[in-house]
Image (cartoon, rainbow, N blue to C red; front, top):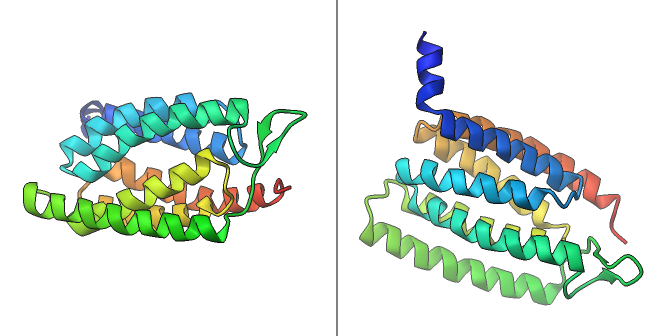
Length: 197
């Protein structure tokens, strides 16, 4: 009976965790359906993170909704970048040094801004860690939308840190989800390496 009560009290988070696992599986396979699944997952996690007082992570889900629409478009139409003209698809590429510099700068600005807001304007118990995960996730998701191979390294870091953070917040289905994400990030790294042109 306790298990049933727990499930009924956490069904939204459980649904989000299951959708998230499907999302990463589709990401590894470079399947276009990852984007609509990602939209559903993000919508659910807006609620979960608001309830857990993880405001930066909640805001990140709004960003995921927007970047999922862009990613879906870029993956369908090639977008700017390394495109196979014949097939009109975006190819997996390595990150360029100029992009590393720009993304590092963007990360520093995002992290600092989020930390200041969370520390001074909210009741977040973990503003630094919440800001770190959120900032790095924004960068990694943009890289995914552009099919940049190295985004997997960022996900390994994000997911490992997130497991510890969510454990401290008592978000156990989400802890399980991010542990699976972490393992799947290593699989994605291996699988995407095979498809770099």
